[in-house]
Length: 441
Image (cartoon, rainbow, N blue to C red; front, side, top):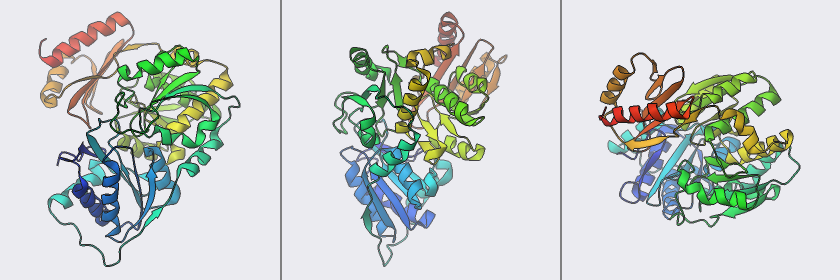
């Protein structure tokens, strides 16, 4: 069952993910958690509503009441889980994956995400071993529970800006539309691709793929907007464009939000994923914060946030996590906080980011999957004079450059990130590393 991933359940519909599997996963979840009340939401993919119905059927036949929050973003689902005090939640989505995919992001109570190491493996085993419980005599009910207004009302308490920022927003034909539906009066929004369409007719809803941002970049300049924002498929990630039409590194946004938070509240622990620029921990430390590096992935970061009592965390991929949202993502809150910062500092986004653009990096390079055990041994030998760490994959560090090589937890890919003090050094070290990975060096 390859659909059980490190952080969620995800695969092609209907050959890997289908209604039968959704029913079984929900039934297994009921047995695993002994839940009484569970939130269920879904995105705009053509198969999502049908999978939602099967999840609801699996839960209700086990006596569980389902709170149907309908079509929503993943951050709204997390908020519903935490704020309603339920025993779990299901979000039917395949995030940024293409139109043929679907899946499930599953949490226990208080929006604690299930990973393969903490729950998904057990669900998988119950299904494979056919040890699912029989239906209960008394079934649960499906209860309508819209959360859009409650989510936006909760976020309004963080607003300090008084102007009406002009923002170009690329929704990617996805549920970012729902993420900020109740907050649109705060901004002057120039929308792109705001018709919900899970076939993604214009481009993949993935701001990490920079070619998807070209229209957004040009529209920001054309409309003289304060900035641009691009949501991914389930709106738990967001990429940003500055007022000049330049792409802002999503890791650098972590530093901007973290610095402002610390300046307001005093010293805080902030987490950043190991692909982030060295400028991120440096910026956090410069204002008295404690920066701690984590592996990649939302489940492990949320777990670390709880353990460290961290106020905020960010990833290179554009996930931004807030203690206030049950240690989960809220991209609408990022928009609000960025607007607060722009008005308070009277600086443009490019001016805020410029001091953080100290180093040069490749961004995340995706390569065909490799035998990582053999590859890492080869890299360790080649770079044996470096500082080597294996928090997530292999990180190789020298004084003036560093890199991380790791296997993706969601796709059959090898992910590579290189950063250096100069552009020339970056190109040299990148080319040598890629040659070593390919076996040509």
